[in-house]
Amino acid sequence: MISTETLALLRSHRSIRKFKDKALPAGLLEEILVAGQCAATSSFLQGATIIRVTDKAKRQQLAEAAGNQPYVSSAAEFMVFCADLNRAGQCCEQYEKPFSGEFTEQFIIATVDTALLAQNVVVAAEASGLGICYIGGIRNNPRQVADLLDLPKGVYPVFGLCLGFPDQDPECKPRLPLPVIVKENSYNTDGDREAIAAYDNEIQEYYRTRTGGGHGISWSEQVSTLLSEKSRPHMRDFLKEQGFTFK
Image (cartoon, rainbow, N blue to C red; front, top):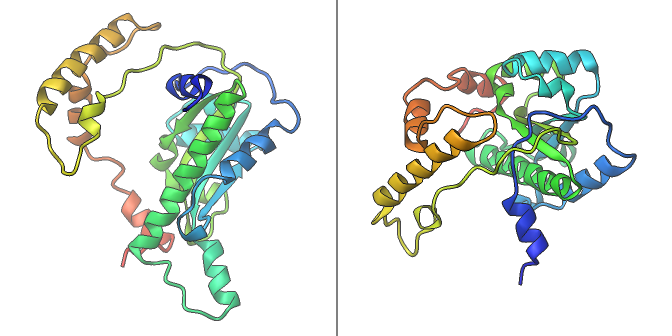
């Protein structure tokens, strides 16, 4: 049986965008990051690297590059999580073996490794009473971010992560009904349309009543707007520049 405390922690996740001006206790960040390292990793590649950004000027530049998100510079900690095949390439060089890091599969492995590592960090941080906010906005200007952090070829920034003591207590955002995302034996969408319609109403009510208000539109409308627009079309060329040629 999963402990009720563990379930409560996992179900209470919220994005925090306002942090107290308070540093983490000595040793806490290291404990959190060690827990993060214990995440699953495909083929033991460990294809992720974390850049902890402590330089205030760099933090400010990253905040601006990510779309002027102030919590990037105000959170106690900000880290950039990178998919990393450069380290694996060095292993191939050491043992005089050809490096196949340009294959799409290796890109997927490193990206998934990075996400798993980050989510372990998030759970450990939240278990310690901290709040977090993922920052996908660093992909708005990936070349600027890569240059700022001296990322070599074979490495790209997947997302950033703000971490610190929360100075707000937002409500948890409802998720899609479980039967919509969990299927048995095949991709069966029977009943999905009705379930999503009910969920859309739930989300609209959430936005109407949550602290600080909100746009009040449904989940389906949000998704339709998101996917009807161009989304960071520069990423493909940037990834190729970083050595990810997707063979």
